[in-house]
Length: 328
Ligand code: ADP
Ligand code: F6P
Image (cartoon, rainbow, N blue to C red; front, top):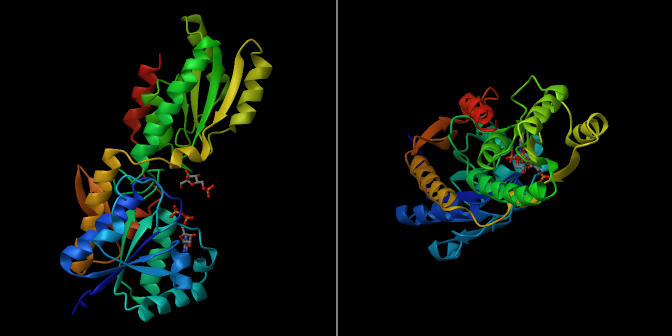
């Protein structure tokens, strides 16, 4: 028989993402709706190991829907990678009478969650929270939409100065090994070229040919969006190569960095986080475990955590074609 859940712990782990606070808020308030206790765990798995937790009720999450980052804070906790670390974490869960855990994070956090479940049969549900959108089985991760809008705003600003000086800008965006941010923000920002890890046939000479062609057709400035993951050449090597072979192009590099992870979440991310937070608590109350709550065609779906972690996730290849056509 499935054990009745009386107390749920919630934590945010790995890189923070806008909308994590909205997800915590939804978990806390869904627990209240079920009359189940809820406890917030600070700094992801680190707080679990150090027993740093706080009881939470609906008022603990007031004015949180619009705040970026995560008020529970997050961490990359190396001790949790070791089995001994997870023993301590499990002991603290038991000591605090926590019956189940909601883990809001990316693939690393889900891998840790799976291990905790496999080793101690502890009920866990994951919510995808990362700007990278690199989780299999969900159309979107929390924070991705906000990051996209931040990147597009930055590209718009770069375009103003690029076109004023007839310059070529190489703009590096985040995404770890995934090109989702680059391809969507590249299309949305009107980039001339978008370089992503999923496109394996990178050639700098072809890139230069394409820039020459743009020049011949009357373009006086260009923006190239480069994903931070492996694209064949890093952004500084690209700049040096273009400088050497086309000294007439005035090249500048802009690495957008961590500003992409900050800021108030978009309405899309707030609604997504709210939906997934409520569905995560529903799932735990129904006795489900080892799943991620993703979203497919606007509806929350339960995805086996092993499937969520599948590395063979495919990028929407139609976007590559669209990018190619609209950048001409
Ligand atoms: P994200 O969840 O955003 O992918 P990380 O990869 O940094 O971020 O993972 C977050 C945390 O999850 C790590 O600091 C660690 O505590 C835990 N974790 C990651 N990978 C593993 C693993 N293989 N085994 C156990 N715990 C892990
Ligand atoms: O996973 C989110 C992310 O922002 C990635 O896009 C990026 O590669 C990484 O985290 C940066 O990590 P850190 O903040 O530890 O430098």
